[in-house]
Amino acid sequence: MFAGAFTLCWLAMAAHPDALALLAGLLFELSAHVRAHLEICVTLMAMLIVCRVADACTLLATVAVPYFVLFICNGLVAICVTIYNVNQVSYRQALVDARLQGRMNATVRSFV
Image (tube, rainbow, N blue to C red; front, side, top):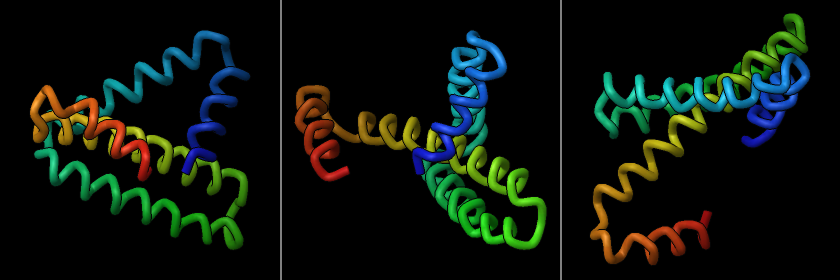
C-alpha cells in the first residue's frame, strides 16, 4: 500500500523540491472535496472499491505498457488510501467521546 505513496513522493521530489508540499496539499484538498460531496460511509466504501480495482488493474501491466500502467495504478492506490485514512480517522473521532479518543487511537494503532 505504501509503495504507491512512496513512488509518488519520490517522483514529486525529482520534479521540484516544493512539489512534495504541493502533492500533500493536493491530497488533503481532494480528500475534503470527496468527503464534502459524499457521505462518510459511501466515501469509505468507494475508496476501498477503487483501491481494490486499481490493485487488480496492475495485472494489465503484463499486457500493456508496464511502467505507465503501474505508475497510474500505484498513484490511484496512494490517493485512495490517503482519502480513506483521513475519513476513517474523522469518522472514529466523531463516534468516540473526547475523553476516550486517546485510548481509542492507541488501540487502533496497536492493531493496524
